[in-house]
Image 1 (cartoon, helix red, strand yellow):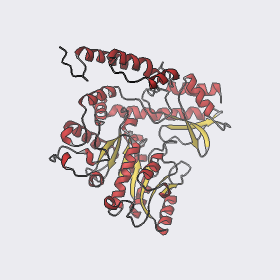
Image 2 (cartoon, rainbow, N blue to C red):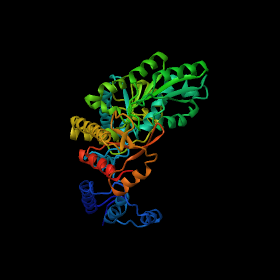
Image 3 (cartoon, one colour):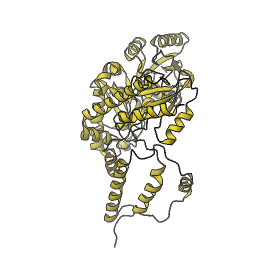
Image 4 (cartoon, rainbow, N blue to C red):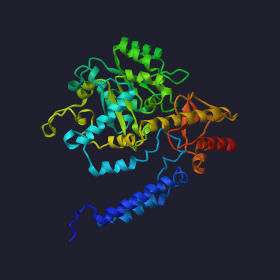
Length: 468
């Protein structure tokens, strides 16, 4: 008599699932360079996939993996391809899928420590290391999130609890004056979205002009703060950016921090793209001001190449983080333990998966120096791409290359959409569209440790040969 629980696999099914999974992962790795970057979508198949009802009787392990191999993979974007250059999204580390499998198997709920004791310690270890990278003091703390957008949203929530009188009780409704947040005109859309979600309203977000290097102008920021105070409004927070999405520019963090200190403003740094370039010696001076932020968002699923999702919020004063998010409830009470952390008190989520394992596992397997090498390699390839573009008469660089985002275009071309479509269709590369001071541009962002100089040269050679 088969005593396998109804939703478990028996021994033979586990063996088959393991074999099929390992084959899939191995084939995926071996086939990356030959795979199409953008799939030739089989719309009939996807429509059938959408309309096929869930079976009353299961199809079994082998049939499932056949569907994944035949239907899912051919219609998926190959984000690990060396010439996937459209977005700030790198491939996962080699150990990432295995760590994710372990996390799924043990299914820890990383809310209060009794449900996830080892996971609590692992997350604390990862956050401590990230805080050290940023330059935060021992009293800092944080939480891993679904991404940089949620980290920025949570950072602004902490700022509101800290700077708005009795915010937990009366919220925005009971404030004596409207609160205002400031950010760069080049800032990520997550700042506007956070302001809308938190109830600040887009009318109370100031987009500060940028200089010729696309960095927030501190003089303009100071003038806006003064004007809003004069108008009876209440400035409370500045969101600076270390690595804007379009050009990779880094705001002048130290002068902004000086102004925030003088004006009693919370400073949040959106470091989702660029802050972890602190791992590279050559960028430490540029990014040193991150250490002065009251809070900072990071994205381990970018420069630490963790599988999605893995964002992070760090807050300089751990007590302020807990003041924003800690709530008591008898059904979630467990004795405090100095070794453990209840991460439900560090962010908006109660149920949380074991995100820290894939970050921790990669750092343990490869070591920090390997990440320094990989990140440094992306910087050098971006510079090589910029040099190649500047050497071609038909191409022009449209913004300084501070990190790994390279914005460029054909001289005299008003719209690059056809070029981008052609590059993708022929399999040369997937680049992103960009607008640089209102001008159409192409954008390549080198965030893949598999990308080589030969990939960059192939891209530029193809652009020059084909023309606009």
